[in-house]
Amino acid sequence: MTFQELAHRAAAFMGVDGGAVVEHADALHPTYPSEYHGVKGRSVPIEVEGGYPRAVVRARVAEPKLGSLGETHSSTIATDPPDAMEGVIVAKAKACSRCGDSGWLLPCQTQGCPHAWCFKKSNGILGCLPEKQLPAGFKFTCPPCLGVKKLPTPYPTLGELGLAQIHPTTIAPLLVHTMRYDGEASTYPRDHLMLQFKEEYLRCPELLHLCDIEMKRGASQVTKLQKRVNPAISWAAALHQPFDYLAFIDTHSCDQTGELCYSTDPDGYGLTAPLAQLLRSYGGVRLATALAQSSGLKGLVLLTCGSAFTNAQHYAGIMEVMRTYVFLLDLPDSPAHASRCRSQFDFILGFSGDIIIPRFWMPAITAFLVRTFHRHRSKIDLAFYSSFCTGAMPLTTSPAVLMLRRGKDIIATETRYSDHLRRVWGLRPPTCPKCEGGFTELKPTVGGQGHAFCMFKCPVCPFRSAYMKRPQWQTPASSHSYFFTNPFPLSPDDSLYISRNLQPATSVAPVVPGYAPPNPAPSAGHKKKKGRA
Image 1 (spheres, rainbow, N blue to C red):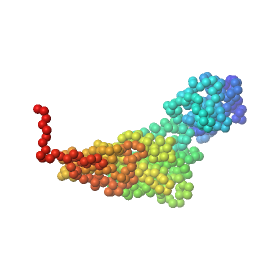
Image 2: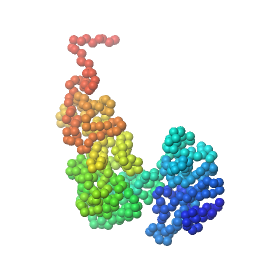
Image 3: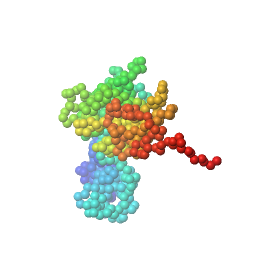
Image 4: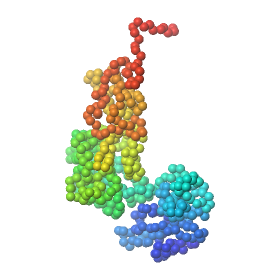
């Protein structure tokens, strides 16, 4: 059968004229149509000589693309299956049941089973089944059907390296809303984040949209803001499906009030505002309305100094933002206040350290966001532990605060790393009480499993402390060693736990809890044995 005959048969099957166009099977994922085609297509198995489907042909009617009337897009026809699979039924399913790719697929032979596995991915790399090891006339039965019959798997499968999920079928549209302080010349946090997200949405770039705003003041900022926000609103309206939302704020915070800096005055001093006001000013009512109509996952990341969370007044404002509605805190009559509104943030990530260095934190933040939006949507805390508790950095520099929504309640936890050289249990080390007129930090010595107890000694004077146990309000972070969580914020007594429980040692060698006391010092009348000359 020639190329033209096969194309006309596909067109006749779909009820269009011979001028209908078709395209390669690997050019487009069937679940997410590309923005370069105006209409959706469907898979058509074509019967040819041999009595079995040879190719998957996706026919598309040549209609004008939205926004460009009279403009059509042509394409080509799908190729035949590889020669190694001659005589094997190769069809038709929309995507591989294991990896989600739309390459060459083998359907399950069990009647009524919708599963199919790929033996070659759409971009030519290895599929889930090793093509060269499958026998001629191989009939595929999926593992779930084999499990029902209590039969072992009779065919080999490739490992996880060959099963890279090129295009997850559960991926959701994502709107990334970045707000940057105009005094920062570096765009590293935004670039690092978007570089990874663009790779995640490589097969469906139309499902990812960036609304990047450089926070400034002045009348001209309103026009610039509209030019940034309007495309995001149009993108959300054209989806006709729920979408996820991520707000990413990269700025400084005031050490006295905890408010976030958005610009500078003519004298160079920073201008600050609370979080709620910042979201309303650089989001707008139209964006808030679009968010209220979407039931997707919504998150906020505050890449700011720790005073935004440690200041009690500003932290209360952050809790209010998460407890109520995004952007529309002062508009009680807005549609976002409906009973089915889903415009609240599902999680907020921040930090409580004095200084936050972006290059330390961005790799972990990016990994956390990718896991949250694409893999662990229902287990955000698991995504957090997998991203921040797999290595010592960056929690060695600052604790991290994660706020989650549990029904109507909001749970805020702080995760710390216990550094045996400086910050045991993630707490600030105490100063020596004996060194008068000095500010000497005591050096810790830890012991026990998971730093169960610790003692301190002064590097200047002979001061040594007695051993103290790890505070009871700290719990291990999942199964990760030396990472601990505690409720946030801590009470004043708990934050000064080490200083309040610091007691001098009663003997030369401090007594370790749970161990026998040290041997007593020899008496004055005890004679020491002489050694060899």
